[in-house]
Amino acid sequence: MDTLLEVAVTADVSLEREFEARLADSSRLAFRVALGVLHNAADAEDVAQEAFVKAYQNFGRLRDRERFRAWLSRTAWRLAIDRLRSAGRREQRELRAADFPRPSSVEDAAAAREFQERLNQAIDELPEKLRQVLILAAIEGNDMRETAELLGIREGTVRSRLFAARKRLAAKLRGIVT
Amino acid sequence: MDCERYQEWIEDAAAEVPAAARHPELKAHVAACPRCRAAFEREQSLVVAIDGSLRATLAAEPSPGFAAGVRAGLFKERVRPRSWLAGWAPVAAGVLAASLLVAAWVGRRQKAEGRKHSAHVASAVTRTNPAPRSGRRQRQVEVRNQKPGVTRGRTQGRLLVAANRRRRSAAGPGLEVLVPKRQAAAVMQLYNSVWVSDRELAAVVARGPEAASELAPISSRLAPISSGSSGLAPKPLEIKPLETPPLDAELQPLSAPDDAMDRSDR
Image (tube, rainbow over all chains, first blue to last red; front, side, top):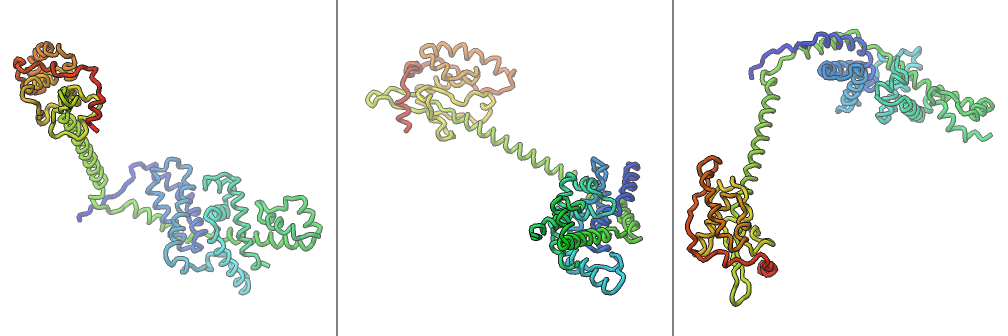
């Protein structure tokens, strides 16, 4: 079948510029949301990149541009969850030393690695609503209000979900930290 | 000291946002009980470790090539080879869907027209003649191609044309009415006059003895209609003098009881 190389040039240059600005503003958010789900920097970068492509495709149709960060974080979350659920991904996942702070000694390193693995496992087992709040609230710069805006829920809901998530994690990790 | 009852409070207080022992009672107990204070501190340190670990993980920066990768992905999206058909696919799908809708609509309309025509063809002309020996006997003028049950109803016993109220329905195939020979001309004349004047046959016939005199003025209206001004092609009307016995002589009066007909239908 004959194909023509069509150059998709967005007629609205201002729209393109606006997207560029938001790209610079939100690139870390997408990456970190994906990292919170996948626990793997390389995978998180792939997912964030995919999320930006989707965002680019739909940016013109986004009614409320101020909600771009919320929309992007939801897209990155959904893509990361999809990737996590893909066959064999969970088994292949491994923690990379470069992704986490380096411990001071070998014992500390082993303990930190074990704790991190158990923590990741416990986070993965949380219900999605609790997990979303926990991760978004842990991303630097996100307070309760910001987390509530990103998720489109009330601040009080964020607070109660965060409390529930912490309690569940603490119940699972009690005994590791002495 | 009953420390067990404070255990859950301690866990809640450690996980609270922001972590603090809100309950004055718990606060007082933790201050007074070294064991519970240690438990509270342990629980708090666990929550702090969880938060700290999570924050440290999520503070990671993407690799230096990340931004370039994102831009490369966007560039691929901007410059993307597309099949020339791809642009027309939605249009073609829309045209196809519209065609299907139109075809379905036309089909339904034709079906509905067919149903209306059937109803017209099935116009029931019934008459009731007095039977000398067996009381009332229904003699039904038979109409071919009619739906079963159309001729039934409470109006039986009257000469009627049930569905012949639309001139356009006369454009369909002809109506075949079987009537006694001696009454054929009268029925035909009545039918045509009703068709032309858009009046109900029953209304004409039910007038009784005056029906015959009604026919002349009705048939006189044929001239302008048959001249083509209405755009319709009425059936040819044969105007003949009523040689047959007067139709009204055999008609039952309007007040004739219907229950005899109803019984014969059952």
